[in-house]
Amino acid sequence: MLLCLLALAGASTLLCAAAESENKPFCSWTCAVFTLQWPGAFCQSLDDTSLCKLLPDVNSWLIHGLWPQKIQQCCRCWNMFASDVQDIRGPLEEKWPSLLTSRSSLRFWKDEWEKHGACAGCVEGLNSPLAYFSTCLKLRQRFDLQKALEDAGVTPSCQRPYKLAEVQKALLPLAGGDKMEIQCIKDHQEREVWFQTKIQLSRNMSLGCPHDSGGGGSSGGRHHDGKDGGSSSGGHPCPDGEAFYYVPIDHQHPLRPCG
Image 1: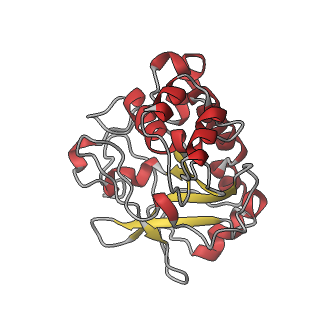
Image 2: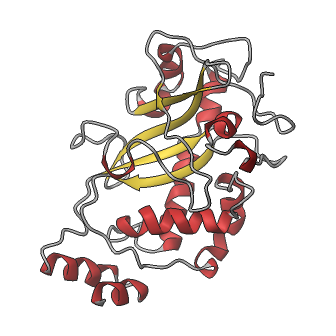
């Protein structure tokens, strides 16, 4: 109860101290994963594809979340309210909207905060909902996948497949290529389709995480986007040496952008 009251008051420093005093390492994480998702393939990743929506202004890579890894203990009762992110509501709607008909963007943000943000909240720069979401927006600006890909001639296509080495080379200016996990899903034609990108970060948000062998932790595998049945497959690493597709965003036919 003490932990929750302190969290609700925004006293992250006291929260960490209280947790440590109970021998529960609240702030034990050293690595995080910043995940971006590609709307062109998102709908095909859903268990219930009827829940998918792609609004007309969705035309670029979107934030999925910032996930501290290998969390041992955190308070799950540090609530978030709409007023916490009111000052950045516009940018969040643009870069981090919900793509589910059954869930508002605010509900999406609350879910991400309660599951991941509150666990990161003892770190300076992430120690409130506003700080956490503001940092995510800065990371999205920093890791502009679309520009890096376009500059390298990697563009969405239903006819042109890509190899992992091509994509990694295109992203070399952003992350050295090897600090990102390129994830795929299989579409209705059983083709590998680029679905999302996971970027490894250290606790101070610098690129890479030497303390982690990569990928696992609290957010490995299947990631649930909400409590409303709209769960999404976490995808799998795009196969090395095998072609995969970077499909276009089709607002009219989001489930089958390539027919």
